[in-house]
Length: 259
Picture 1 (cartoon, rainbow, N blue to C red):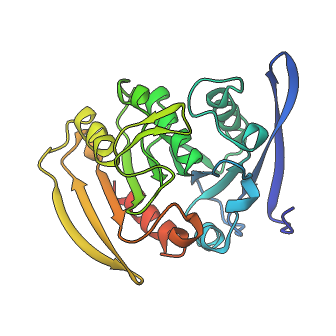
Picture 2 (cartoon, rainbow, N blue to C red; picture 1 turned 90 degrees about the vertical axis):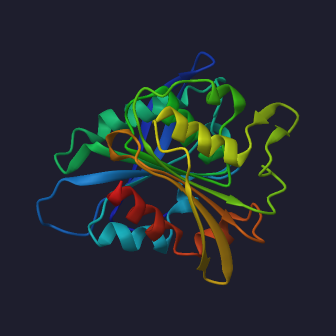
């Protein structure tokens, strides 16, 4: 439960397995009375979570700076069907956009998705199967092999972050939970860059994010001025809270604005 009068709790009816289900999501507008036309950022939680889990100070600070409208949806039974399953999450995403479009403050030409783990799989899927996103940030996840074979409907900018020691969705990819076959993290980033005709000899470097050293691979000169950036956080695993503490939302939003 979010105790914030600026948060709007909304629901959309969807039929799943022949039953009507109310899909829940939270919307947070900037705390401002000034007329504006804001970008929209969707935050997709990981498996076992819900939208409220990502409603944290790091996001609120950016929202109240007037950077964007934040949307925090909840997956059916606390997960996203990042491959085709019973709940049509692509349809849910489209219906949320239709609802948001009723408000003149919403700029549907600038819609972005940030997803953690299972939510990262969801933003990858949305970027491959719709033409509704400008940019995505899959965190501690990469594309499933079957997604890698799909040609995206439009170019998007990609900010992919992986933990070097991730033992849930390993950098090398492979079979996870006995049923999902992931590309390698590098292969997933390269797949995006190849689809968007980026320069395939990327720039490589290292930085310090807090106490963590990160390896950064940047594919540039993509179509429509898009970019693909792959970050590997040394000595980090699948711990989402650990990664979020590294000014991650600020880094992602700066990347989205510049690409």
